[in-house]
Amino acid sequence: MKYLHRITILYLIISFIIFCMGWLRLSVAIPATAIILWATWQLLKQDSPAQLPISNSRFPFYLLLITFTWTLLSGVGGYTFQNWDHNWRNAVLHDLVNYDWPVFYSTPESGPVKMLVYYVGYWLPSALVGKLLGWQAANFFLFLWTWLGVFLVALHLASALKTSTVKAILLLIFFSGMDVLGTLFLSPEYPTLFPAVTHLEIWNGSLQYSSFTTQLFWVFNQSVPAWLCIAAIITLSNREGTQTDTRSILIILWSLCFFFAPLASVGLLPYLLIELIKQTDFKSPFKDLRWDILFAAVIIFLLSAFFFTSNTAAQSRGFQSLAIKDFLVFFLLEGGILWLLLALVKWRDPRWMVTGVLLAVIPFIQLGSGNDFVMRASIAPLFYLMMMVGEVIFQNTSPRILRFTFYCLLLAGSLTSLYEINRSVYRTYQYYFVQGESDCSCDVPLRVTHLEQGSAPELEHTDTLIADEIRTLQYMDDKLSKNFIASVRQSLYYRYISPR
Image (cartoon, rainbow, N blue to C red; front, side):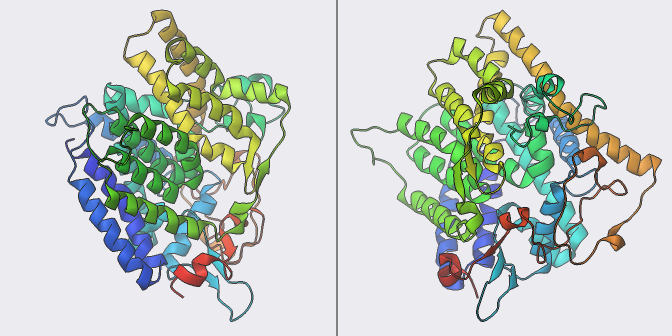
């Protein structure tokens, strides 16, 4: 595991290089790619910051097996049951494979220019494979790519927590708020505790802090790269000794998080600032900065920002009001109790303070349609909350009664992930062994304009595993499609950067 740091950098940077060559005009793409490649070379020359609790001679077989199973059950690749959100994920991959890049749906001489404007970075390596070898190859590579990403996250997590890789991945899989209590006492109709395949996350309607299993099973394209950026920042910040360009690497990791998952990067920003402040000598703040790496980070951020802001749906923002009682119940059950208990040992840790502030403030912010900001901006504070809990239970430096209390709370929270996993197992078993395999692709209309979401994910697309009802976003005209399709004629991206 000597090369963990280098592999992580390559994993994250490859997608942005593909983005540059496919989504930017050559006069922008060539110099941008050259700068990114130079910065990548400089980053690859650095030693890995992670000191893993496994020797190089001991292959992490159990970690491979657990991450493989978890990724397989997520539905990525289409080999097991896919939750409703995969309809949109599959549609994006279809269009990335079938259309030229960038993906334009209409380019009239005057009037709206319709274009795919979304966080497409995670799919680009798989879409490139799909262009060469077809749809099935694209899905197979997407599964392998996701498995590799989850595997790297687990290695970073084990390094940061100084524990075994198996303990680290199990914490990631089963860490969650206590949705079971919200379901038991506050859920009006759905979800219910029986059958044990319901989606417990929505006990409070659309307002939720998603568990990491839910994130993987529903929005893998944002969660996996965001986890990896966060985990790499943590291991980089925790390493012993000093290195001249640590701050520059932290900043480029954050810019890559912005490229893959901009909402998650918003929640990560305060933690980045904490680390930058800790590692800055204010008597000579610019000493030893790697300006070439910083310049690459700025390029990644600016090009991503120009692209994302061409979708006006992302510019719709404001605040939503919540009753104090509803907010307090949501906050406490979705991580607040864990956060308050951590005060006994972490109250001096600025990460603890920032985590509480973010988890308390995020529910009141609305960006775009729905509550996507709440669910995705919370990825970073939830990850840090998990890290701090892991430090308490694995490092044996806290009172035994506190560790026992955390284990009890984690056990209650784990039901959220178990229900997600159980739904996938149940529907996959039904498909392969009870109803028999079937292919409903011939029944999917070619021009789907809207997609209704059912109230019970376990009852979606009952004849097939695959959530593939859209096929292309070209004809979509409902509220959610505005998150993916934009009229870009007046945007800076279309006018000055896009290859048209």
